[in-house]
Structures are given as C-alpha cells and as structure tokens.
Image (tube, rainbow, N blue to C red):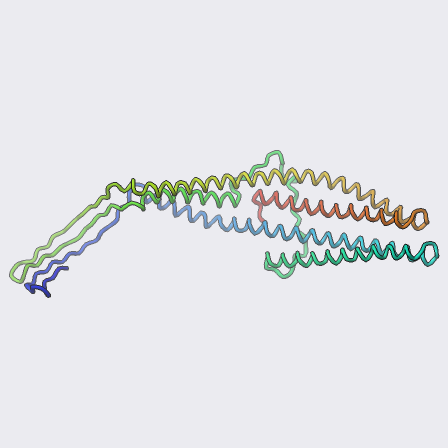
Length: 338
C-alpha cells in the first residue's frame, strides 16, 4: 500500500495484493517423491539392521557363557578326580605301602587345581555381568543357545550373501538416498521459476475514480545450472562412496562366511580326533588307577596320565567353544537373526 496521508494528504493511494507461486521443474516432483520413499525404506530396514547387530552381540555373550560354564565344569571334574586319587593315596598310606610325602605331593597338586576352579568361577561371574550389560536381564537363560551347524542345513560349496542381508539393505538405502538426494539437489539448488498473480487499485483523489488492474507475471532464472553443478557433483561423489562401502561390506561378509565355513570343517575334524584321544586317555587313566592300587605303577605315573586327560579335556572345551563361535559368525555373516 502506498498512501500520501502523512506527506501530501491528497488522498492518493495505491494498493497491490497478489500471490507468488513457485513452479515445479520437469521431473522435480518425481525426484522429491523418490527421495521421500527412500527415507521411508531406510526407516523400515533400520529395525532389521538393529536386530541383526543385537543378535551378534547376544550371540557373543551367550557363547562366552557357554565357554566359561564348560571350563568351570571341566576344572571341577579334574578337582574331583584328584580327590579320588587322594582317597586312594590315603588308604595306601594307612596301610603303610607309600610314604607321607606322596600324599603331600598329590595334595599340593589338588590345591593348585582348586585355584583353577576359583579362577573359572570368577570368569563365570564376569561373563554373567557382561550378559546383564548387553541384554539388560539380571537372570541368565536356563538353557544354552544351540544353533544348528550350517553343514546340516546348507552346502558350503555355494556361499553367497543374499541382497536381503540387513546390513546390505541398510547400505543399499544409503546409496539410494545419496543418488536421489543428488538429483533433488540439482533442482532445489537453483532459483525456481515463479508465477505471480495479483491485483492493483489506484486512487488519485476524491474527484477521480479509482482504477483496478489485474497482473500476471512469470519469472525464469537464467544460468543456474552451472552455478549448482559443483554441489551436484559433490553429492554424486558421496553416492559413489556409499556404493563402494556397500560392495566392500558385501565382500567382507562373503569373506567371513567362507572363512567360518572352512574353519568349521577343520574344527569338526579336530573334534573327531579329540574324541578318540579322550576315549583312549580315559581308558588309560582307569587302567593306571587300577595298576596304582596294585602298586604296579608309581604316583608320578598316575599324575602324569591324569594330567594328559585333563589337557585333552581342556582341548575338547576349546574346540567346542570355537565351534559355537564359528557357527555364530557364519549365521551372523548370513544375516540370520535371533
């Protein structure tokens, strides 16, 4: 509004009213809709991605719980076997068949084993605390997590990570957002064409009739494409980096999958050999105990054989823990969630 009420006060007034509308460029509306769709898809796959990450962490803490439980059970079993040997030695000492130094010797080894049991119990406490931190549960599960070995359900000769993997889906949406964001930027970074529609009333005084006019205007920016090209190219570079990150992640998952499958074969074969070794060692311990009771072998031989069985037992626990870990890594690389 232009009014001379303060200056000349000749009742000269001019009033303009109108609206300016920004116009969509060809393809801009579709680009905006595509970008919006990509953001929606990323929000949808984020839940699966978060569940996949959480599954990996839960698998780790449960595998650790299983490992320390087995270690505690093994050390307790060894301690109990030493107590059985002590009972035999005490009986022979009472009968005057061996010297007291032999009893002290096996008691000293039993005390060392009890320290191992205490250390194993401490590791169980640490693992339970870590489980509570990761899951938020103060009570550990009553049953162990037992996931099927991949050899029972799939052929390791064909190991590929599916595109539906939560991590790849998440990275794929990042690529789509970056590409469509660059396309959207090519529109929004430039000045927009506008359509203006308005009306004007001119009043030249009391004695002069007012004049009403209608105005329509159209503005077109010139030379904006060159100005926004560096920004668009930079956005396209970000999209290329996102695509490289996705392919790198896919190769990393496939490498982890192949490595876990190969190591599972090795560990499975080692467990078969270990089972045979343990069977032989158990028979040897039983025979050595009988021979010791008959005074056919000395205490040192019995303890040596017992140590061999304990070593094989610890190797069994280590192989079982390694197999559980490899199964978890295999399923995690495949994108299987709990």
